[in-house]
Image 1 (cartoon, helix red, strand yellow):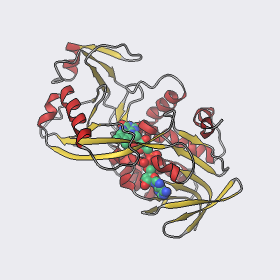
Image 2 (tube, helix red, strand yellow; image 1 turned 180 degrees about the horizontal axis):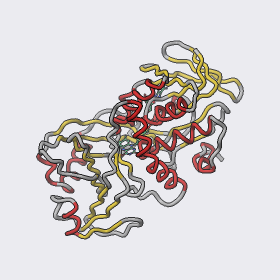
Image 3 (spheres, protein in one colour; image 1 turned 90 degrees about the horizontal axis):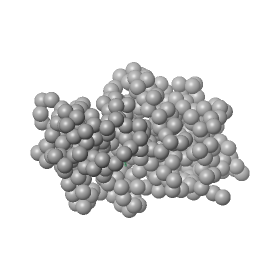
Length: 350
Ligand SMILES: Cc1cc2nc3c(=O)[nH]c(=O)nc-3n(C[C@H](O)[C@H](O)[C@H](O)COP(=O)(O)OP(=O)(O)OC[C@H]3O[C@@H](n4cnc5c(N)ncnc54)[C@H](O)[C@@H]3O)c2cc1C
């Protein structure tokens, strides 16, 4: 089988890139081992470059560009797929137990905070308000991206793993898969998230995050914005779920939720927003963030001239999906961007 572009990985990064390339008239195939085990299914979906306090520089520029694209990008995906992505520019409130100054945020004192969000812990001293940050329902987004990709003619090979690349000097000539097919393409994109080292020696490693959700039983949503605490975040969805996350653990690909992980999340979440203790728990899950040593993604060129890298998005891959798709599609169409220099894989090799 041959295709213009072969994308390995079906998380938000692979799917968003496939759609962008297809809309620019390439024939595109995605090979994906498992949609549900990716970080894109596990995430909280916050679009939080400012609340996350990403320092000024190329990463903040990348994140802000992507946040700016989000509204139009999700409208386009929703229009083509006919499915909601749950994009909600609800703002993010960061309550604190002690005031420590922050840049680019509006301070709300204790009484302004409780007017903004009733029933927070009495220990909360005030909060920082980030009106431009928001969220997307990452599971709804992933479903909509899949439907959109299929609707516009991207070919998806699901439940198939790429075992290895085939190289000829500095060029990839094909991939071998678990179905014993050889697939050839003009261009290849590696979008395999935390599993990237299985195929290429680049420094991406898994950082496990455990999460849980409760379901609101009240008629009206008790939370109307994301709460971003110092070690906990609480993300209300419009369908009545409240997502609580997340641990950050260096345990390789060790699966499962642990009592210690759940205890930590529940303790911190209930401390910040006590009404949570009475809602029914709906689900526990975990996922693996694709982390790099400097916590920045690896984007653009690889050691092979027809292999492009789109991995290592760590804590911000949902946020960074639209800008990554644009930049990677530009690379494949021979357009360069000076922003990409900051995310080149060679920064890890002297
Ligand atoms: C708990 C948690 C909370 C998070 N919260 C947020 C958040 O609030 N906001 C935010 O912006 N980001 C968040 N993130 C980070 C975000 O989820 C990731 O950065 C993003 O999903 C990475 O997307 P991806 O497509 O690169 O990887 P993934 O979604 O992991 O997808 C990788 C895909 O590659 C496939 N694959 C791997 N190897 C192969 C192979 N050899 N052959 C075929 N297929 C293969 C996998 O099956 C998978 O489908 C969070 C992550 C976690 C774990």
